[in-house]
Image (tube, rainbow, N blue to C red; front, side):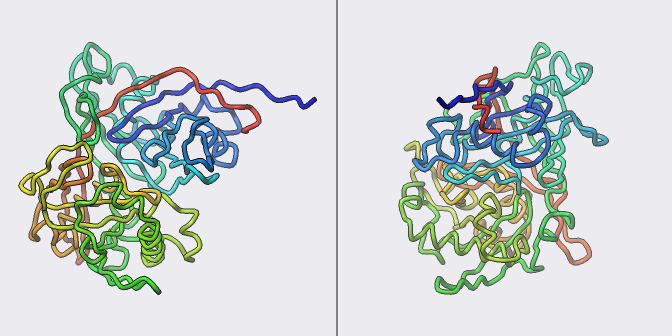
Length: 396
């Protein structure tokens, strides 16, 4: 008779951050074998989320069968000067045995500050009785600083409130985020515009040629014109995700864009790097009906943006892609800037499948190169459940 190992318990916090959800761990709570990068860590996160699942549902795990909810975060008290917490993000594939560590999650970034306070990673003396706690976060995946402004009431994180976010049903407390130097020479793949151009022509054999803006800001992103793809920019998930041929075309463009950006050395590497780069398409403002049934008017926005994550159109907008949108919009001549009407701007409001979102960026031209010093946006976050997750011991 085969003897099966029992399950192990791992303390965890299940949180919503922006329009994403994920399982948050304190580094020291993970089994010893998973406290450093490697196969054991990946195996635990895959089993926690319920991946790989050939049925695509993640029924036997905490994932909810979308890229927005198949996420894991590991936090630790930071040993880096002037930072409070180290934040490591893993994008867990739904149907493949893959955890992608190549980028950040901007939505879950909003939950890092509140979770760090909840886990006791922030010194009590730093937390006001009432007011705002400033949490300096080291985003370990990409080596960047994020500053979270976490509201505090009676010494506790204020989670409830009246801040509304399209793509999230219920209002909550606002968490303002500053992404400092989201693009610089240290970014993987090079400078903010890795090819040195604001607009490139991407040649995809057997697919076509597309004008594109390739940018490293928040997360490496490929921007295309909706019209060049045969889209209006008003598409919802059903219009894109049910089109297997269209998704294959997007993946081919993404792979060639990654190669041009210097993120991969061979096209075959794109298959194991699903989280980055992102791919998005833009269009001038136009009225449409959001996925909730709400009418979004052209007058409510500066431009339309639709973005794909892990091979599917996102139901709203990834936070890191929003940083890329805000940054590209601030640079005259990019496809994003042109879709928004051109000219200099420090903030844009864009329409996405669930509604609209405003994001700001401070960009400047120095020594002939564009640089961005800060990108700003607001999200909300809330603890959904806390306790332990159970993982079969033979997963390690």
